[in-house]
Image (cartoon, rainbow, N blue to C red):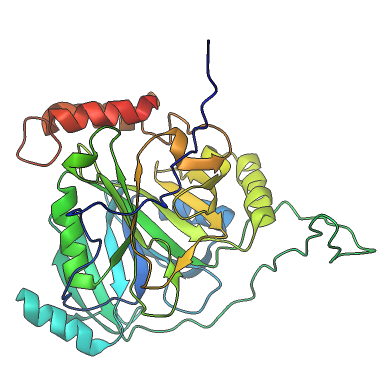
Length: 377
C-alpha cells in the first residue's frame, strides 16, 4: 500500500549541527564585509544585454561602446557591470567593505596591493582570487548613486482584515523594478576550501548547510552565507556556494517589492520573448518568493521578494539537499534550473562530471552518486 510522504518534513533546517560539524563562521576573520556590491560580466553584445536588463527591471547608469552599468532603485553602487568581450562569461563578484581601512588590512594580510577604481565607480579596491579561481574584488569609498523612484508594494486584504476598500487591484504588466542586488550562487569543485576562504577573509557566516542525502557524515555540499552585521539583520544569504563538477556561476538574485511585481514583471518578460527557468514559488532556505529567468546569453537571474533576514545570533541550520526540498510551494524544479535540460550547459556539466572524478578536487565518485540522487529526489 502506498503511503503519502510529506516532502517538506524536516526540510526547514530547524535541526542544528551535530558535535564536531562545521560551525559556519570563522573564529578570527580578517575583515567583515558589509554587503555584496556588484557582479561583473563580459558579453559580446551590450545592446542586447541592455534590452533584457530593462525588461528585467534594471535602470542604466552608463552605456558606452565597451561598458554597461546597471542599477536598482536603492541608493548605492551599480548592481551589475558588463564589459564588452569576445564571448559571454561571468568575471566575478565585488563585495563592499565597511571602509578603506578594511580594504588596506585585507591587502596587507594577503600580500596584495590596493588600487583606485575607474572614475565611473570611484573608490579603492583589492583584487583577490578564491580557491576555485574566481576573481573576487573588495571595494570601499565608491560613488553612491542617489535613490530612484521605487515601485510601491500593493495594499492587501488578508482574510477578514480589510486594508483596501472601494478601490480595485490592477497591477500593470510592466517590468518589475529591481531594488537591489541580493545574492550570487557559485558552484565549486573545491567547495569546503572555498567556503572557509570566504569565512576567514570576509567574516561571512553560514545561515544554512545542506548535505547530500545519506552523506551527512562526509560534510555539507551547499551553504547559504550572510554578512555579519552584528545585531542588524542581514539577508539570509548574500553568497551561496555548492559543490559541483565545475567552477561556475549558477545564478544571481535581485529584490523587487512584492509578489505582484514578480508575477506581472514575469508576464512582461514572457510576452517580450524571454525564457522562464523556474517559478513562481517560495524557497525553503531563505523563504524568498522567487521567479527564475534566462537572459539572452544563458545566464540565470532571479526576481525575489520577502526574504529572511538574520542577525549574527542565529546558528546554521542543517538539512538534506533534494530537488523537492528547494521550494515550499510552486511547480517542481525544472530540468533547466537543475542544469539537466538538453543543451550546451547540460553537455558542459556532463563533461565536467567525467573530468572532475579524475581530478584532485572535492568532487569524487561518491559525491557524483550523491548529486545524481539529488536530481532524482
